[in-house]
Length: 450
Image (tube, rainbow, N blue to C red; front, side):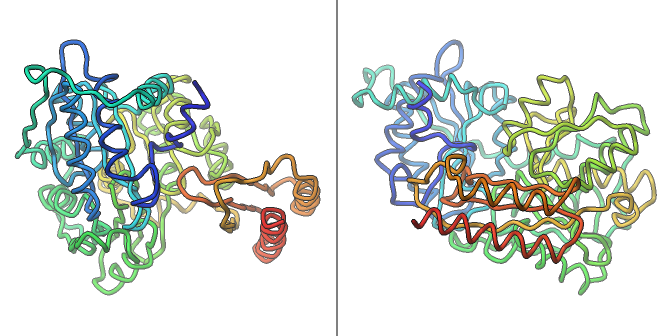
């Protein structure tokens, strides 16, 4: 079963280049039927489908709708909506599952599928395995009288906007704040500006003109230089950069400096601690900067690391009974506010701290001294050699760890969403870290090529 699961499902659903298996229309038709067979049971047969702004979303939406109907599932179409909005609407519409058509922060020529359970959470491994098993079965269609129907939810955006606003206290207003909001030409291009404007902010928008091809293109959370420049040009108090599907956020302070997910976690954790609202501690990942760990330690806030990926962070939070965790990329989980990573909700939590404390982002993050961290992506194929089995790579890693000392770290890991090996080094001396990272990347590249 686990081998079957790994055939299609990665760390964040199914993702790849459009036109390459499994990101094809015929596969999505079969996936819709398989998901409908597995998920659409009990009292609810309804599955909600949302998407980001990629041009291929139209094709995959139609294919999934047809497959689900063939399995007897009803379909509620949301149109372009952020990933966390689909999680929320899956719960509030009492659907049996939610489907997101998105490749998140990837370029437009990629696309993918994410699933949510009826509770608005990522599917457990066993459910993904059941869908994979059903995919191996011949395509079949239920009797005509049992086939599913499709409807469109016209007020989906309004419902989600009200939910986001409700995640901060009613008395908190954003009046007097000038905010640049970068929607990455993605799924938040309508709802994000509306949320911040309705809370009183003076909003300057960028990345709000999607054409199907420009999602994440030199904008959004993966390219914060864009919003940083806009903050300086407009003399804004801060900037908010979301990714293509709206589950990640990074922010920019009034000086145009990027405030990443690690620093945002520090702001939220220390504020909750001061108010007596922090449940346990904070979950980061193996990629979380050591500077955050040290800053939290000074505040006596417990910190633990999970594997990379929000589903692993979520599992660790649930296992420990904690509510706050995330990644440097800006994929933050505030389980005391919502069930999944939500860029808009996370930004609102930070804005609440700013308003209630009267402090800017620069002041709120002053105690986090991040160590220099370098990541080099090494292109590879699907048939990657076992990194741990390479004696040359292991020898290089041990040598570099010795050079970095107690505050240095080496992380080698395959990307869960792209054909890459991520070579990451962290240490006290930026020049040394850069040099050693390039040397290790050369070793990894040479081993994979040879």
